[in-house]
Image (tube, rainbow, N blue to C red; front, side):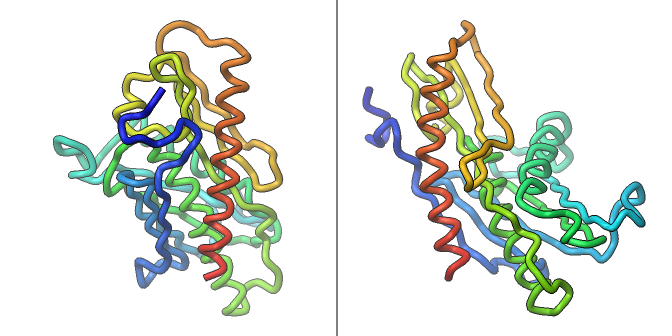
Length: 234
């Protein structure tokens, strides 16, 4: 089945990551999955939440918001529900990349602000957030605040859908909003998974469908990990 923009079913949208887009955060990137654009900033504080104080380990948390103008019709600045669910997902995903004990008693807060939404915003936030956290940790190393990197692996996230009865990778909004099945996969670069979110929008889906989506997502993740590696290398 041809897609509206002629993209093959197993091809990601064009992915762009620009680093250093903000001066003050310890690590910042602007990540685009074609028309989905997210600004991600990682800020480091030499403290931890009260419930972690004195336990000798750090924490990574995230905040997520869709800015006014990111969608047709104005988004309000205060959002609940969906935004809270996504920021918990982003935080869980980014904690999986770091040895929190080796990070020490410090907090990394990752702010994810959607500038433009065309589906896949949570996946862009996680993929860009990984780069922002790695840049923040590189600065901690450079300034002598860490003697060894606590980064254990990279993470990224990929969306897949079944739309018009066909599994496809990285849908845009025109494909995502009419999907029969919607799934998000968070991968580690060692091949393991942090999280799978899968939802039937109508009829339930079977195991072969899930396996087909997983194969597509893994292929997309391989490409994203290479893009992250190239970005950090620059």
